[in-house]
Each structure stands twice: as structure tokens, then as C-alpha cells.
Image 1 (cartoon, rainbow, N blue to C red):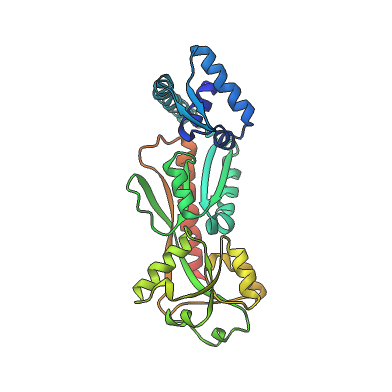
Image 2 (cartoon, rainbow, N blue to C red):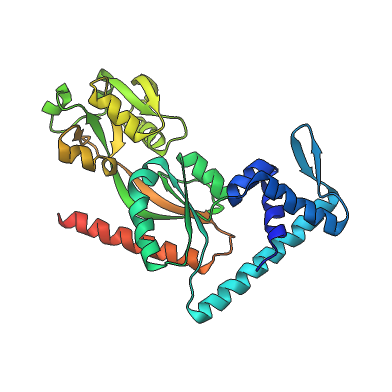
Length: 305
């Protein structure tokens, strides 16, 4: 119902890129350009200056953006209030998840949520923790679910899961003879690490500092952006790693890898994050409540086993 041209315009104005706006809106770039051209023809003036593959808002464009933002917020408030009165929950809802959560944790939650709220269209973006937080800050996604602590005071952070990180090694590795592993033991073996910006990497760094060590003492021979890549290299006997126990269900069942706890357990929260000032659609509120309830139930079941 809200003017599609204004939605396209505010997205381009926020990202200052027709290409990124097209990706965010799931449109082609020519379609985005057409919507902007229509709006410029309506006002009979340019809204963007285009120079050297770069765009900036004109003075008029900046004023249009100020009003467009208000109009879209008012529309969302109206839509939300009406749906609250009618009991209707609809989307779209854009969710972001850090790599470990996106690959192993969130798919089951999204699937169960979609089964309950069939009229909500959930879109999922997966990136490392820093990338997801950046998307929330820039209003590219409605909700993020990330690993480890979040330091931005402008974001609401709700912990939904207590995750354990374990030492992962091949089944014939010498460490498998130990009941648990000390932090110092990690320094004695080739190490396969996560990439910079990963929540797992940040938690591991902080853990080593708490044990009077630092990550520079690790013999890091490779770095990857995916737990699956790390597991493949570790299973080949090229080194050990630190991964979430949540990523190890299949390998432990097949006995293709070993997971060993640290003497002092390494734990981290999985947290939902969203903008403190963001207007929350009913679909977003329902997703927050649904995810918190789902995680609380699953955590209780794990404690009983």
C-alpha cells in the first residue's frame, strides 16, 4: 500500500547504491532505476547526483528522504495497529544470522515459525558476526542473531542460548586420549582458525586472555569462513580447531570427528539484536517471542538428557 517509489527511494538513499538497493529489495537494477526516474519526473528535479560511479543526495533529495522516512514509519504503524486488531500477522521479515547460527541453529527456528505464521515471508541473510551487526545498524535487516557479546548501546541485545565451544580433532589425534584439554594444550598443535570478524574467533581470543595466553601464540596454519571447511581440514588430520558443539551433531553421531571440552569450559551467548529505536512490526514481535520460547524449551530438554 505504501508508495513503492518511496520505498525504493529510501533504500537507495540509505545505501547510496542502485546495485545494493536492488539486491536488498530483490529487484533488478533497471527496475530500481525506473522507480527513481518516475519519482524525479514527479518532482521535476533530480534527487541524486551521479558522478564517477558514485551517487549522492541532492538538497531536494535530502528533503524528500526526511519526509519519505516519516511516511513509511507512519504507514508501518497504521498497518501494525490494524493487524493487531484483526489478529493478522504478515511479513516480510528480514532476519540475519552469523555463520554458525545461520548454518546450524536458525533453520529449524525459521521453519517452525513459518509453519505457525504462514503469511510472514522470512528472508534470511548469513554473514559473520560483524557483518550481521553492521546490517542491523544500517537497517538492512530487522533482526540479527549473533555469537558472542554485542557492544553497541543503540542495539537491544537479548540472550537466547548458552553455547559451548569445544576442541575438535580427528579421531586418531593424540588429544583424544585426554578427558579434557587445557588452554595451554592448544599451543602444541597446528590450529585451524575462523576468519577475522567471526564471533567464534573473538570469543576464543577473549578466552585465551583469561587464561594468561593470547591468540598470537597459536600455531594457526589456515583460516576459513565456515565451520564445514574447518571440519573437513581437521578430519584430514591437518590440525585442531575450536567450534561450537552445535555444529558437531552429525560428526559425533558418525564418529568422524572428536569433540573434547576444555578444562575451563569456553561458553558464549547466542543473542538476538535489533535497533532500540526501530518501529517493530507485529511479525517481528512474534518472531522474538517465538525464538525465545523455542530456545528456552530446547535448552531445558538438553539439561534433562
